[in-house]
Length: 138
Image (cartoon, rainbow, N blue to C red; front, side):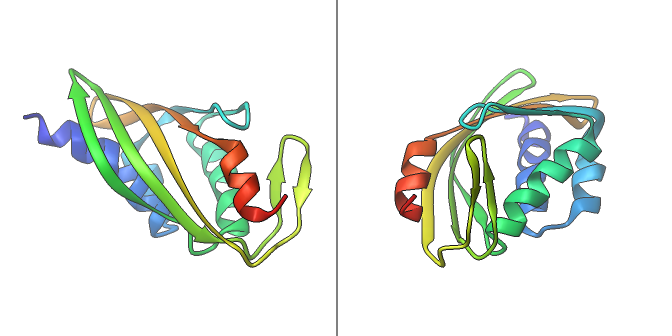
């Protein structure tokens, strides 16, 4: 099993969990492409991706993902995740900002991660925005 490809794919999630933006830069290609399907937001370049992720970290400072299942095919890794956190800061959404509710979230997600040259090249993340909004009472 190509553990290094899996470890590379997981590294960006672990770095987010730790809110360690330097570690994101270490595991990601400079041209990292991120596609957040539920919000219809995309980011190109590691700095823009980090900025988007910092928005989530502001809204949910204790947010973390756990790994539920991993599958790999060549340089493509599929990560099934569960995101958990507490809504303590403003959350930017496609339809506007949601003020902190203090409510907990727990949503299942899937990331399709492309790895090349021992770096994360792209991440497509799928989750149910409706479930997230319902849990926040929005």
